[in-house]
Image 1 (cartoon, rainbow, N blue to C red):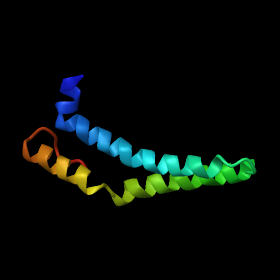
Image 2: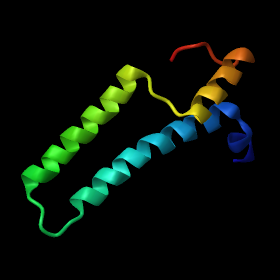
Image 3: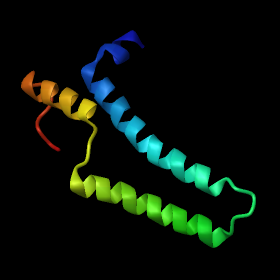
Amino acid sequence: MTDFFNDPQSILYLRFIHSQIKLCTNSIKKVEGEDIWGSEVAEELRMLQDHILNRKEEKKFTSAILEIKSQLVEDGLITKVF
């Protein structure tokens, strides 16, 4: 387990997941209300999906992710894919 947390590729993966979880958490908070219709939940899920897809298309990543990725590319551990 210590190897996992010392591996820069693992840290890159965890930072990416962390940034996606924030989006999901915000959507969950919106639909947790007691007086919410199914159509409102469906709309929130559509908006979440659109937001995630837009992030992918626009290649929006946090500065921490970009910094780790650049270092991994520089060290030859990964190829530049995003």
